[in-house]
Length: 288
Image 1: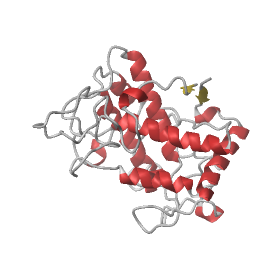
Image 2: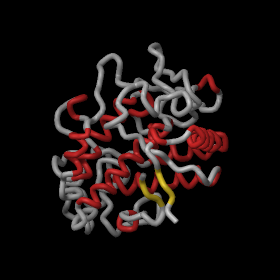
Image 3: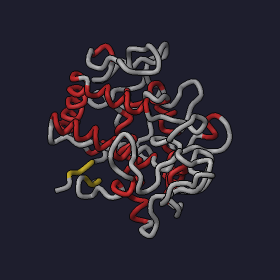
Image 4: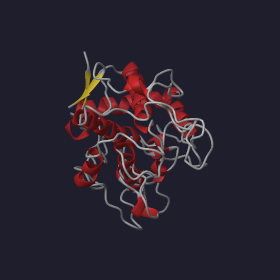
C-alpha cells in the first residue's frame, strides 16, 4: 500500500518530531553525508563536459525523484512512520512561516555569518555539523529572502506557467531552452542575476546559504523543496497524459548533446534505473 507525503503545514507535532529525529539519526550514522556527496558529484553544468544527469537536463526530474526516494527509504529505515513532507512555497511564503519554525527546520541565519542559530539543525545544538561541502564551513547557513537584496518566492501564477507547458522538454535539452515543462520548472531563464531565476532555482536562492551550491543537500530544506517539485511533475503528468519524458531516443552522434543527456530508456546514474521506470511511482507513495 502506498504511503503518503503530506504538506509540511499539516504535520502533527508528533510527525514533525519523528521526521526531525530520523534526519538527525541519519546524520549521526554518517548516512546523510553520503547524500550530500552524491549531489555534489552529479551537479554537472552546461559548460562542463560529460553527462548531465541531475541538473540542466531532461533527467532533472527523474534524477531528483529517485534521490528523494532513496533519502525517504533511509528515513523509514530509522522510523517507518516517516515520509518526506513537501513545502508549498506558493502558499507559505514568509521567513517565519512553516517550515521555518523551531520544531522543524529552524529559521534564517544571523546577519554576521548567516549561521542558523535556531531549531534542531543549528550548529549550537550539536547535531548537524557540516562535514561535506564546497567550502570549509562547519555550520548550516541560510539567508531567507536574501536580506541585502530581497527576493520573493515564486507565485502560483509563475508555477502554473510551467504546468501549462505541453512538451516535457525540448532540444537542445539544456538550461537555454525557453519552452518545455522541465526547464520552466527547473528555472533557468534568460537575463542576468535574479531576473534569470525561476521556480525551483529561485527557491534555492531565496533560502540562500547552503542552498545556493552543489552542496545544497546540507540544508534539510532541500528535501521539502524537492518533494514539492516532484509533486509538480506528478501534476503535469496528470494534466498532460498524452505527453511523456523526452527525449525518447538519445541525441545522434552529430548532435552537440550526444552523450550528454539521458534518454527515456537509458540508465540514470548512479542507479540502474531509467526515466521511463520513474515516471509512475504511485505504487510506492502519493501526495496528500
